[in-house]
Image (cartoon, rainbow, N blue to C red; front, side, top):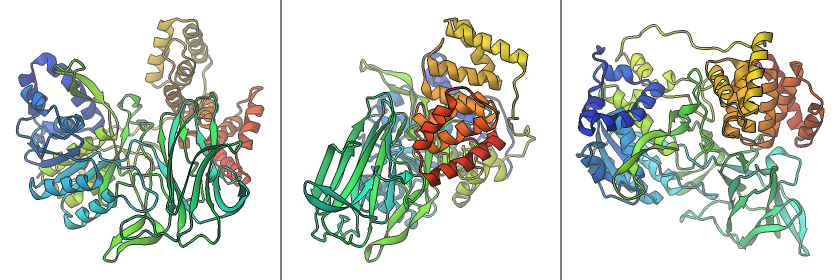
Length: 625
């Protein structure tokens, strides 16, 4: 049945305003308006759809301040709770769902350990009769088998095909290498070992890179067939795991029959740090199985793994399985014509499983089965009520990470469910109508099928009538006009001299879509001229200008990718962008030296691939990542 739209102020938000008082509502509605602007659910609200009666279960660490929030009308008092847990993240997740679907029925269960999280999901389904379950519990990937949460959720998906499951894509930006055993002979302490090394050979994936001022956590382990307990099987041969610097000094090591080594690395230098990871065994051959390296990223500009090729694994969240929709977080403040940047800590895909559950226990998959996770993207930084530092009341603050993105997508699903869209169709409709966040069109490792669009999905489902939309924005390759060039350069010079008005005017021009101003604003953020220095903002503005064909922005963007300033270090993409700028006629004296340095970071096959990318970027800047 097609719904008719009515009114301009949704009842849920109006009721919230009455209960809070309009001063508090003004602050609370900032989060709602931001979500509505990006997720496009205002037409559904105007048609009277606010998630009526849909049961949504939330799993997180705790909802310790629920009573305060319910007493102040921020959350409904009838939320079903299976315990308070510890912390407040559950309170915040409930608020995000409630902001989007204010008339949905909510429940909370405190998770944590993988088995406890699975038990919570089962309790929400069996006792609360949840139609939608969303959690933010993302255990670290393990090197020898799937996580207990992945196995448990696989059973839940199989047993409850009518329930929609959402989870965060992961805040660690992690990935892993899994490949065949390629031993090299290494002599250490008078002992000869067969060794698998990462960082010593010319192959691109063998490098462990961490950008300036960034941190990394590396989890390394062997991946031979596990016993029934889930631990790796024992063949009686001890294995040594090491992390060394480039000079061979051992930073961390462990030895054992089934060793696991976790080490935290920090780069306090002003340039990229490179480490080596080694797996050493005193005899050959390697038993049945493979080597897996798990690396987890924290901080800006970190690339613990260079996964360009020769990898049998993926860079996803091992907590997810097919049938569970992993949601990546995008920064709502980075919007430009409907395009948003993913948060730096958001994981990318695909997700790969190398073991499966069967009647006989864990069964190794050859090769690993990879599937498209994350599935969608949704905004984070939603303003929610958080406990005040003085312990009295609460303050409105942004809620960041995939913990906020997951419940945002779940809230949209609740709106569609309330309009009697079958659960089996909701995921397919959201995939078909999601707004792509840049090349490639279709599924992307960073944002899945794109940004969730509630109203578009409702139109595709026949719930809302179609309306004529403006044609999508496609930036045209831009060429500098002399007058505009002189004016913008004058603003840049003023900002460099400390004129904040010039910096503000340049920012306004950039936000209005002028490519040259966008390029120069990137320079302001990179240098800290008239604005707070922000390498990531510089990278974002240079990306927009580069896609419009501004050649110096293409070159600058290449440098950021090369050195990992405001972006994950990626020498192949960095070199390709610098060469693309050169192909489009950009040249200045230090450029050749910079290109020669970039070439030394790439093997011959990687350089050939980078040249192919350069030709593609030069021919069509819209393909620039």
